[in-house]
Length: 363
Ligand code: MG
Image (cartoon, rainbow, N blue to C red; front, top):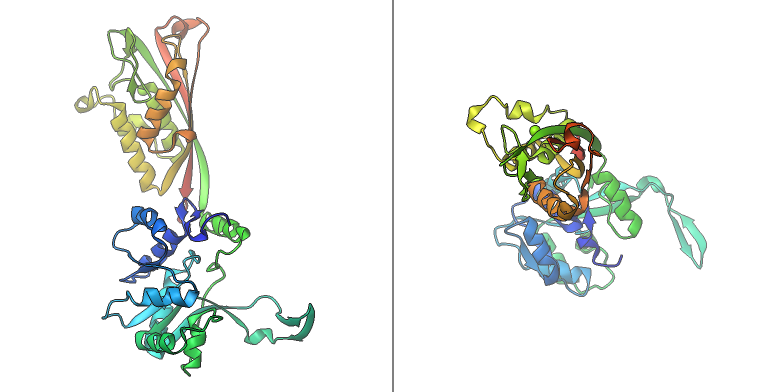
């Protein structure tokens, strides 16, 4: 798949980071990640306190390397594929509990397809589907059982899971029903399915914002969070940054969460002269409280002066810092008012803006 599949982005995070998160949510106190050193810096950006082990040349060797790092007080050990990021934390906990009670347990799902045994492209026999389960991970064991299985049979090259070794010891392995979301990401279409599952509760909403301020001689001119040298600036209870005001109202509009005049009333003397960046940061807090993120914003300032084109990139960079999203998702542009009316005479300017938000629905 071009690069290690565990590090491919899934819903904006590496697959392996989502896998680790699932184990954290399940309350697993010690997580050992068997991955090459080059993958670790990216994981360390998401987590602290992970323990690492080096991969071996086979799956079982990797499991053995990880098992060597398990702390002595651990009673039960779960072995999991890093490429199964959508495992349900409740299923992890159930599998661990079953293993603690019975010695060994694996997550599995009933097989949906009819399975044929074939040789030379010819069916030899059809298996009874009602008895077939597809094994997933985690596969959980009491520590001493896994230790014995790895010691006795760990050198076997063709074992595709540890459960086979434990079965050989004569230990009965319990099956804990799982779900089909806990798929192993193996081929490119698996990642497309996983991406769809990660986004199944995501909705997109767009909000609109508008603002107008007078231009007065002798005031500083703020546009999108930066000061632009000019002889006039926007009059306002705040610093008058109408681009930030229109964008903030667009964001709040997408959330159906009011407007900045309610959050920061112009009658409140304590906030006179407030920086509009402070207003935008408050709006960003509201975005996060709604489990949302800004996907895209687009603002057009309508003004006769000063000319905005030379400042497009600086304003976009500033908006990227203020709203904490990549600059590629921000559009900023300007229009003249063709010398018509107050805006055309340079007495005022206005801004129109839209913002699209990605909202994680709690339904
Ligand atoms: Mg305003």
